[in-house]
Length: 287
Length: 341
Image 1 (cartoon, chains in turn green, yellow):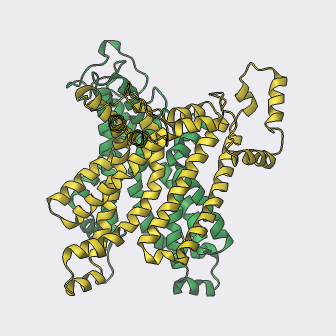
Image 2 (image 1 turned 180 degrees about the vertical axis):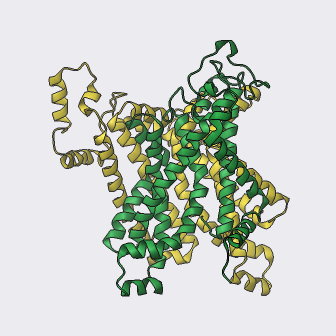
Image 3 (image 1 turned 90 degrees about the vertical axis):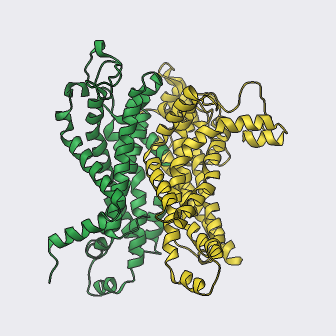
């Protein structure tokens, strides 16, 4: 009897929820994504996400009216944190959706041509990118270009793809001598067929697991760039820049800094737990 | 061990190739930035003929491959040119700022290895009992916290509420002076026979190094734990257990050693991340390292300084990984054969 979708889902959920803490991760991730998509419309003060000024309410400590207090010019910090979620999510999704395919192609082509000039060339280029401390490469790229959201994504993508190249290389070079690939070659299949129809399905679960596990790190890296002033610019909210601006007013106005920091930690924690769950579900060891 | 020697030599050759590639990458990155490097170096008010003379002297009018050649032939002699921001030789700037960063990275990178292995082994030994749960739970939180948040948190705790450790203001308290021998202050103070100064330098190091090391330490602990558990289920462990080898000998000799190998190879890659994060931590703790220099170089489009910083970091990173490969080869007999990456 063929397995129905229901069975697959049920089995996947069973394996995902084996460790209870990953369920917490799923809840955080779903909550975060929902808030990122519609949060701007449901926060108590939507206008405060942009350039709003209300000096009579400046630097208010957390209260029932302002859950996380207000900032230097009177904007509701809770609204601004939720308002920053959309770019935080976008950062992770876009960076991974570009660097994973690019890394995959480089790695798989090199792995398939193992021990040839193509392999050497591609993998040494990958090594070169890995030899530069990632944050410094990102800082250099982001500062050569205009400091904004798009360019910080570009900077992170530049440093992220080599990891996927390594992963795909490992899988491709070990599969290269498998019989089904040799047969496909014998029947005249071209390289695109072998890469996309034979190797890709075997890489997919490892790649997807790595992507979910990487989500949290990309978000940390984005927040770090934004902390250094190279991310989304004022008046738009970004978690990293909210922290860097708040630090100057520590410890008196602690709520400037503490709530965005907690937001980052919870989001990243959620994605890390979620990634662990996915990796249990797929039965892959992404490390 | 002749095979070990060949492996090392081969790795050394590749390290050189990667280094040349890195220099090309950095050089082209710095040449594609918008703006005339000569104009940027001399400022907007410099007269055109001065800029023209500077351009000719720096070979900026030659074709790019020739520019690269001129630049590289200087760099291999340790001459990175003048910094346009500090108006000094980049090599001198690096010699001044690099030791502080190196000391920070060494303290953030080496001692935590011990704790990472300890926590990983503990977690595996007490699997699914409270020490394991405690380690795993705290590692989730610690890994999810960005390095700069740790730095800010420590600054808050130790700067305002609990001022038992110096949190702002460089590497040494006022009143101490340590002769510069290696540039690593704790070591220099000990060599000069000043234990009080060494302790003071260590206290200054503690918070930034801790902020830098927490995340990757817990990451390595998790890795060690999962490899320990993976090897635990292998046939050879069942076999030696059935032969009556005592449990602590199995743990130490047959379980820990193979489980440490993947963790050690990850550590080489972690060094790059530590260097990157060190930039922010240095800024937050006012550490007189390379960060402020490199940041001002990056923002001021100071081509020579950026090339110098990135190349030096690249050399350090590649050397570290070479050493890591040798350690791995010593730990793992299989790796002594040619290992492909």
